[in-house]
Length: 327
Figure 1 (cartoon, one colour):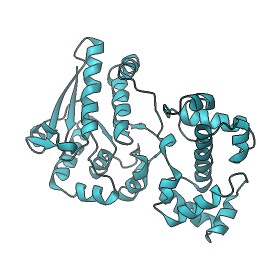
Figure 2 (figure 1 turned 135 degrees about the vertical axis):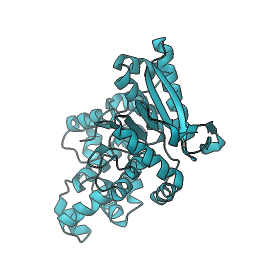
Figure 3 (figure 1 turned 180 degrees about the vertical axis):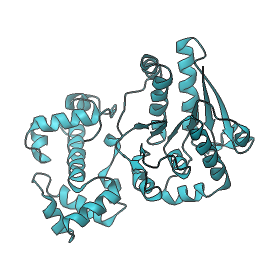
Figure 4 (figure 1 turned 90 degrees about the vertical axis):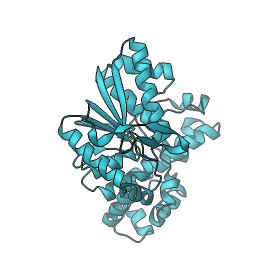
């Protein structure tokens, strides 16, 4: 039996907390045996999750960590809120406990803003990790020794697992069921819970959202969207924003996590997916509209990026699941 500690702090994501228990319970039911046992730990006797939901917790400081430790999202939405949340005494208590747990051999897993608690504990230094895509830059700013990837839904680096946005917690839990149970069990849990495979957040990254947060990124987006059909060079973009190519690259990576030309490709792909879902244009015409030399290149990118063919995306406009890593 795999023993699991669920560390719950005040303000934690109620959805992530519920997903943790639901996935583990489903795995036990499907396996028809108690493969996983869990307890909830917290700095106080009761943790108040978001939405007025409370959970009884055992004292964190008295508990010796089990084989797997899971941390749901903290319930913060911005870098400023995260910094304030991590400055509270319960976050300090939890981060010290997590560092000890990892040193004792526990596997540590967190999703969304819970990943920042791992950073506070020093568990992300030198490790590949992820968090919700719009906070990737904040993660790298607060913990510059980590190696974040905003495209991944779930990452694993040694004994540390991380997941993306709040509902990516289900992807994280399914990955852990696969790690501590079996791949077949994880697949069956996903089928029973009707979860599409989503190994990448890339489909959900909205260039305009990133642009709204930084004037330079907004300049680049406006320029690229105005010339989607054209082949644009790094030098052209740099000239438009009055920066050297090197400085432009450094600032775009800082703001978006992507190099200039990779960000251009994100914009082109975003436009292509929009055409697919809102028009009857052929893939050949869409490829021409967004600056791809041929439709086969666009087809391969869409397939890798979303895990679905263009025709299936068009026929099932509400059921898009990201399964490929944006490379």
